[in-house]
Length: 229
Image 1 (cartoon, rainbow, N blue to C red):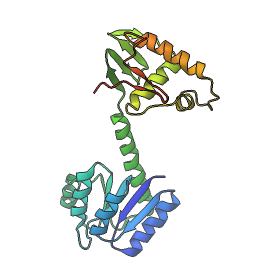
Image 2: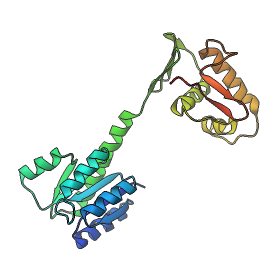
Image 3: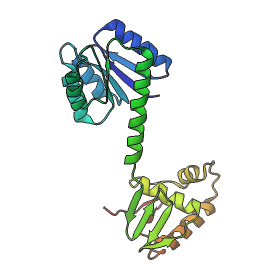
Image 4: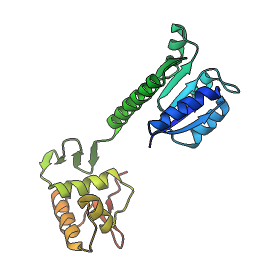
């Protein structure tokens, strides 16, 4: 469930927004001054913030600067300050959208969903899809693996094993964990299935499969990616 932080000192407006967003299946937290907003934002990971400008203790501008110093969480300004200059200033500070009071709850919900969609697309673009380890290049987008510039023909399960290790470079996977993740089924102590796929994968990507550097065995634990730092 996506989390929304409401920063609005008018209790009636805040409660109305909170009620509507909960109807839309958002998890909502409301605070009523700038200091509480900063503390709350730092304590929990929020997916979006609705921010009034006219706040006690700390101003909305100060809160917005703090949020932007921490990352790119979408922020929608909600305020009675409705001049073009005000909009430009606050969007320039890093706000993603602006709603002038009074506004309809339908419009508010539409704006919230829009900034969340944009944020999600942006995060998807930032997900790493290309990896280079040793003399191996892996492109997760087109399922292509190259060794010394030559395409390596992996089966789907071999590719999924390699992808699992590449995307979790610090983690050691037991055979049970690997089987559940790659095959999507419960593991019934059929070690041979994992062993065969690991052996074939090593034969295709390792310079010396008998002394692997990419797919490492952690004796008594499982498998992990070799250390290429």
